[in-house]
Image 1 (cartoon, helix red, strand yellow):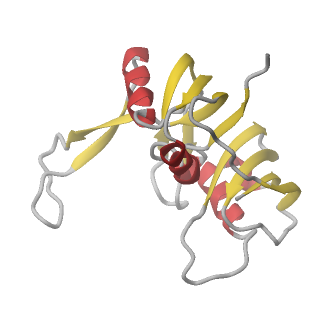
Image 2 (cartoon, one colour; image 1 turned 135 degrees about the horizontal axis):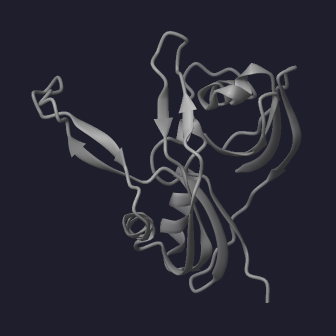
Length: 203
């Protein structure tokens, strides 16, 4: 895997879904490629956004609107029982039945995503996500300003409620935790959610 710091400038900074599209363009063209990167937006304003990106492929291209400030290989060396600091900006949700009684193509009741806003529910959600992979020893939960976006100019504005989770975890299962790191945690990955960052605990 690779970790890259990318600076994005221009109108894309005003729409998180456009940031996702710009990041796609940093990789070699491949008609069969599926999204194999996660990202998190750091410092940003209306003109530029600093993005941390984790990817299976190495980004190779640069444009006027996107510059790769740094890129390094990211090799995991996890051990069971290891304590690590973690940071995760995620979109904790639950699924409920569509209130209007609509059904999908198979005739099953449609379900809608609803954000979890109570801290107790958010805590239970993140604990479920880490179940079998890591034990959360400390956990701080902070709400983040909602993300507002449009996939297309004519679409209605959408909203994603982000939550910042951070603390200390203890590795329980190396394979399971590695899978979480590679795949990301929770929905809204195309909007900058789900990237799990780990660091050693300072003694």
